[in-house]
Amino acid sequence: MSTLIAISGLGIICLLLEILNLRKILIPVIIIGLIAVLGMTVTEFYLGEPFMGTDKYNMIKTTGYSQGFSILFIILAILIITMSPKFYQDKLTKIADYVSLKIFMLAGAVAMVSFGNFALFFIGLEVLSISAYALASSEPKNIKSNEAGMKYFIMGAFASSFILFGIALIYGATGSFDIDEVQLGSLTENTPIWFNIGFVMVSVGMMFKASIAPFHFWAPDVYEGSPTLVTAMMSTLVKVAAIGAFYKIATILAAGITPAYQIAIIVLSILTMTVGNITALKQRNIKRMMAYSGISHAGFMMMTLLAVGSSANTVLYYASAYSFAGIAVFAIILGVCRGKDNEDISNFYGLIKRQPLLTAILICAFLSLSGIPIFAGFFAKFFVFNQMLQTDHLILVIFGIINSVIAVVYYLGVGNVMITKEAETTEKLRVPFEYKAVAVIAIALNIVIGVFPGLIMNLSL
Image (cartoon, rainbow, N blue to C red):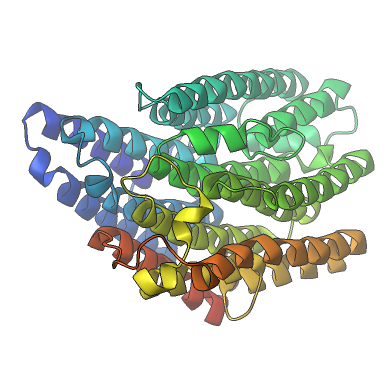
């Protein structure tokens, strides 16, 4: 509870600093505040008890799982907000609006994994979603941004209606929104059929939010049209928040995971990985490529739903490995495509001569996303495959390996043009320090959890 209240308070402070015309100190104050919240959350995790008293209404349920994901979300928010001053340097009069929306998006993500009541889960989902809709369309003079915002809003509202209807059916079947009572009610012998229908509807809505095929078709256009910094946040924070919340919901409603539901998850996981990777092969816009890449990784993370009792650490590890590599990639996209009106792969031609450090980091990030050791992406896939072997889902391991090989083609295809193609100019590319720093920190975090996977896998979630 203390984490959620502190983050919400930071969002309000951000708006107050705008009212007091203190924009110059806004970013430092917010980053220091987020670091303090991060320290508080880590301390709470290792102490095993929250600083604030227990919520007697059980709206918020602080667990190792919720704290682990909250820590990841806060780190991602710090990295993204660090890049905000340079990205919004031409719109400094509106920076408080953009940053406050990102803070409230973070609050929504934390609520989505910390809920003890489905009412709070839905509120958190909508806080995150509405902030994302506004940020996606935050370039009103850009037609693609307008399209991204409208498409995201319509698809998001459609998904939210599914989730709300599903929660209503679950309430009708169990008589409560409280997750403890819902879990007990779902285990009774005479659970009404609408419990299963409700669970399926919530699952469909969450698949929209996580861009699981065939509910993924909005993602490439939204990612391409949104401002790149917003795309970075949607590709990492929003996606892993949806996956983390989906896993928690599946754990609570595990009675609804029938053999038919498991078959559906297997089919959709294979479809998501395959569609995402094969479509990514043809992309020339690197943001669209990353959108399809994110879709394929959502397919890998969805496998953990087949082992909800034992894969909490695995889903957190995969989310962390994917997010840190993703942040590194987007930090470099921001640096390389700065001042240009597109994010075409041709912008990366000959990058090794113009910016060797960024080239090395981008290749490392792509190696992680491909699943190559020593990077965290390799161990993330290894742990997921190990879970699938333990639950006798060999078919998913086979398709996962095939898709990992396909992914190497387009990831290293970008690496290839950076080294072998000639750029239009050999002049050194000037990249803001903030972008470089975030890229270095993100890939360093990825390597650290790759070399020491026990940092996450040995946590008590």
